[in-house]
Length: 211
Image 1 (cartoon, rainbow, N blue to C red):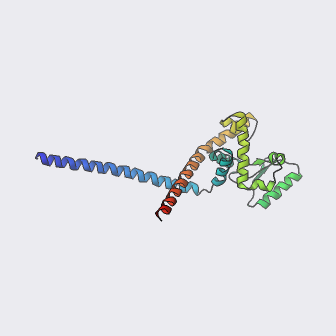
Image 2 (image 1 turned 120 degrees about the horizontal axis):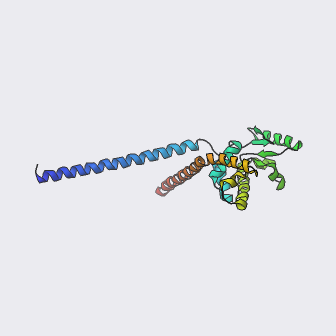
Image 3 (image 1 turned 180 degrees about the vertical axis):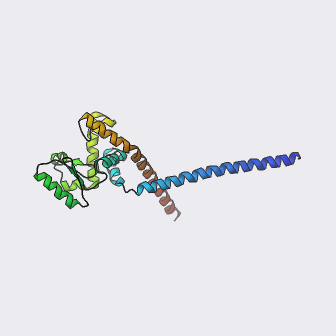
């Protein structure tokens, strides 16, 4: 084999090696993109109340993923869920939920309302109409404000998050452990949803710029 042929063969081999390397990168890129799209569509399909958690985050500075984790533990995302002194009720309409609360009021019982299970103490203290407590934005924001109050007074920690549920250290610790189990998933959920929203805006803006 002549020197020229060796050089030609080496060049061909080098180009093929680069093509294979680039194809591997492309496959990795497409696999990553596919997983991102699939996972983001899957989690968005769960119909979590992200929009309302994001509204509360903007109003209070409390991360939406923490609020979603709390809502999962408190009500399993039941907008019209209530709890009357330890007994849970799940309703499909605000009217049914309000009627049950009126019964609790007549009996002088404590109750919790909505996604974030806001206790009647707060409604009585600030004279908030019960029906307003079932509004998703209001409910999440009230919950975020209650949590923020605890954070301001006790610092940022999982133990402080437990105080959202109870001032009893044992109960607070058990509660914070429940929140922690869900927090990682919802943190990823919120981050992916934000990235998806940004990519959607980028795509739409790109189409608009071409017109």
